[in-house]
Image 1 (cartoon, one colour):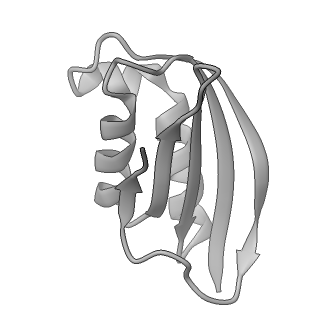
Image 2 (cartoon, helix red, strand yellow):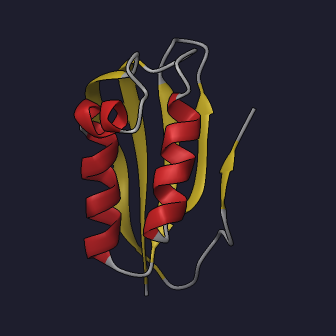
Length: 101
């Protein structure tokens, strides 16, 4: 069983390497999916993991701006995380984590 979530991130998250931070964080936690900038200045993430624990840890890390700052991303400021959907899937949709354009 796969745990999957779609997130909408607001704050200072475009033009500050936030997508790269998300991708590197996901890779380090075994989370797959994608991240992309939206025209309204927000960032959308679709992510999945084999365990709920790792997916929730990924979500907490993305939400915590201090985690980004600890890795040298000083301009990132996450002000809000909206969970658009979260649930279980029968099979993985993604083999890696990608930055979408």
